[in-house]
Image (tube, rainbow, N blue to C red; front, side, top):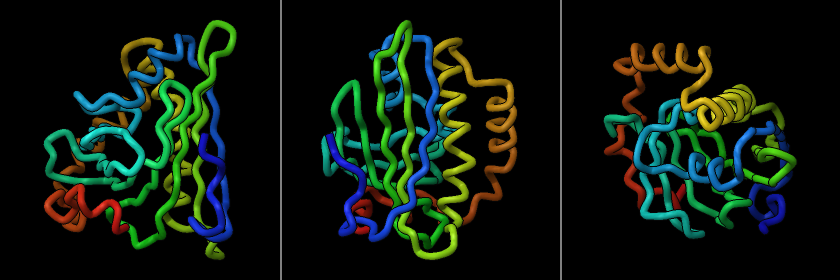
Length: 187
């Protein structure tokens, strides 16, 4: 398993951790986390675009219609069904690349899901770090709900509806033609 980011990756690192217990087998949680066949409500309606999850593989989280790319990254570690780590960059931000780690552990009658975000400590908290702090709770709560009930939380569904209404206002910088997969390793 990959250790926390080394100084050569991010410099000094600020880490945030979010944890939830999901009442489901680890394989079911893992399968939902890495689905590529449809938009993922817990990832704000984004859909993976990736050739696979092997270390070094690029990925993008794109809008359901493929017109916009919200996030780009590269797979760092992939150990089913326990660990997945990748770099992370919002396409509308100039912030440095961050690292996101997902750890799954069987516990009692379910799965402990942990989301860890690592950000370069560049002084003030970056816009990306603030967005991840808000988004991590959404991801954890809605992954839990999707796995346990088949749908996002009510609040999650309302937020996804609002995102769909606001789609025409997505910045031009996020257009997918600006973010081909081969750009991920160069971030």
